Length: 318
Ligand SMILES: Nc1nc2c(ncn2[C@@H]2O[C@H](COP(=O)(O)OP(=O)(O)O)[C@@H](O)[C@H]2O)c(=O)[nH]1
Ligand SMILES: [Mg+2]
Ligand SMILES: [Zn+2]
Image (cartoon, rainbow, N blue to C red; front, side, top):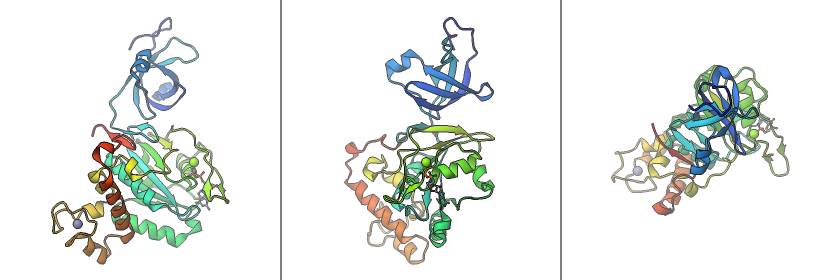
C-alpha cells in the first residue's frame, strides 16, 4: 500500500465493499469499522470498479472527508451482473404464498442462475398466513427437488437457527419479485430494521420499489446480507444460462443423465426419456418439468453468439 499524500501513514486494511454510489464506496474494515473510500485514479482510467462484496485493500487517501482509498481488488469467485454483486456465497430466493402469487418461472430461473455460478441457493416462502396450503405444497415441491426451503408468516418469533447457520460468515443476497417480503425477512434475520419495507399496492398487487441500490449489511456474528433490487424479472435468453447451467438448477431432472434412451437427451419429450417415469412415480414435479422444458426450448433458440455471457453473472473461480 502507498501512504496517502500528506496524511499520516495508515496501514493497509483488508475490507469488504458494502456499497458504492457515485464513486463513493463504503468499506467494512473489521475492527476499524466502516471506512468511506474512493478508488485509485488508475482504476477509473482502466474502467475497473469495485462491486459490493469485493474484498479490497484500503489505504489512506489523505482526504479527511473520504479517508480511504481502494488500492486493490481481490480475485472474485463470481460476479452477479444484475444486481451488481461480487463473491456471493448464497442466494436466498424469496417467493410469497399469495399477494403476489408466486412467479415460479422466476423462482426456477433464479435458482438456475445461482447453481450455474456455483452459488449455494435456498428458497424462502413468505406470507404463509395468506395461503398455508399453497405455501406447504410449494415447499414440498422444492424440497423434493433437493433445495432447502423455509416458510414464514410475519410477524414471526425467532429466526430459524438452521437458516441463520446457513447465512453466518457468508455473503448472501435475497432475490425475488417485488412485494414478496424480502426486506421483511432480511430485517427479521438481521434482528434490525435495516431495510425499508413497502406496502403492497392493491391496485397493481405489487410492492412499491423501496429498495434502490445493492447494499450489503453485516450479519451479526459474521458475513454480509444484500437486499437486491433489479432481479424481479429475468428472461431466459438474457440470463446468460447455457444448457449445463439450466440443468444445474434442475438437479432432479439432471439426475436422469445416462438413463435416457438417447445420449444427450434434452428431456423435452424424446422417446425413451427417463424423466417421464420419474414424473409418473411422483419424484419429478410436472410443473418443474414443464418450466424446464419451456426454458430449454427458449435456450435452444438462442444462438451461442447472441448469448450475453454476463447478463446474469459470471463464474470466475471455484
Ligand atoms: N400478510 C403478510 N404480509 C407480509 C409478510 N411478509 C411481508 N409482508 C408484507 O408485504 C409487503 C411487502 O414486503 P417487503 O418486505 O417490502 O417486500 P420486498 O419488496 O420483497 O422487499 C409489506 O407490506 C410487508 O409488511 C407475511 O409473512 N405475511
Ligand atoms: Mg424490499
Ligand atoms: Zn431424457
